[in-house]
Length: 248
Image 1: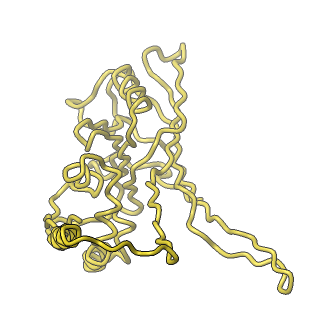
Image 2 (image 1 turned 45 degrees about the vertical axis):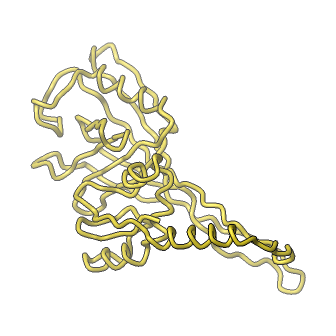
């Protein structure tokens, strides 16, 4: 469990928080930053009982990240706001935007711009509660919970006992054509503001196909991340302009 942003600084735009969707075409910048952002990451140990050894515990992949915080959409602009007054919207507009994001089929893009502990993930809204206090009419108090979205890749295993069928001459030609077409992958140069989800939407028509691109380019993406001081590309969440990737 980690805590981010205790007494988050609101000056000079060093901290920003966004909840976008539709390939970041529809953007929502939070007008006020919460005092605390709670990020929960749990490991998922598995316990196995062995007759001769006893209980053995080993780690598997972690659970999805959960982010939660409470804040408010103010009725009027003030010094507590983290955005310019020219971009300030009525509280009900922010509230309506949150309801739209709850109803959408695809995950949102949550971005916390912070110097020390930035967050950049796709997530589903799993909780949104709100109220309006009588002492502050027009201001909407809310609590938000987001859960990290991770698509599932199912591995196909061929049956080794299955007999191979004899292909005709035409079938063999078709197979050769398929192999040659697969070997010729498109190349794409990453631009500022890109993410694998958006690139997958461009080439495949749906963002959840980004795992194909990640699998084909993980080595290249990790190398680009290491050049910039990171240990790895964080499963494709860190990509950098100028990186040339293959589109399988």
